[in-house]
Length: 349
Image (tube, rainbow, N blue to C red; front, side, top):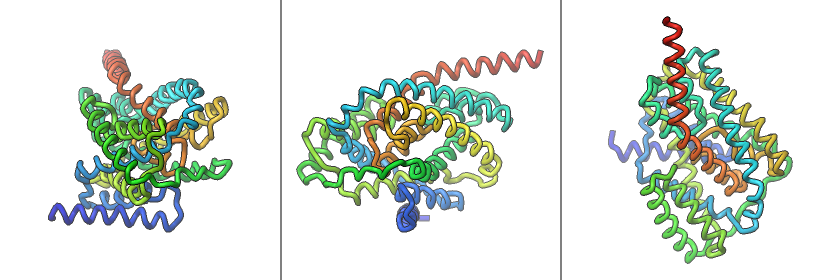
């Protein structure tokens, strides 16, 4: 099939999915609807892969829109972040231990595969480290992708259920053409610089930091036009759904129960910790839930934007989780696999 025709079909599927979800009144509709529709198309055999340049543009747009929510007044609440960041570290460790035990003891997965499937997020980094072990990479990738799918599909409904008051309206004013031009140049340059230095989710990270700096300092004001934000949501939803392209339905069925169980275990741990931390530091429970959600830096940050949350708080925690995993995973993996080999040797003896 012609590449352009395939791409047009994928975009149409994602847009229709987001549009139908919006008409149905679902929360975070453009993101979740596009993801669900693209996932269904992927599992049906359609090649839903999106061009890298198109995804890059989407990440730059999301980063710029996220940064628009950062104001000097909002940053005054950052004094409470160290406590919640410490709670996040405990949550990540607890999720890995609980999910790994579940996958090994209940689902019968091997040690390495269970360990890397239990790491909450940073999929590309996790797969890179896992490739040097005996872990089943296809199983790890599928389990992690199913978790992200469920988070984006289910989390908005949970947020609506636990909200004690109406969400804030967010930034309504659209930036002037001059401010949009400044944002475009700064976000593009920062995204490329972040990619050069190998930062996680580089284009989104750099774009967010540039936009947040400009808005926090009062250099620019206002956000992107909503059509551009919707385009970015649709692209990200399509990206998540495209992870299932070329996946055999029989294989998905064989690991679905274990993957859903792992998601429920991780979600239960994260939810309990988020509620506890929200009570201690005085942040909204729904905001803490998204900040503590186990995985998908780009997806969770975009979800905070779609649900009109404090994007700075969520971004700080999602970046911290990714950075913590990137710094500690090689050491943790070495110790975990070493214990596994020692245990196997003892069993053989």
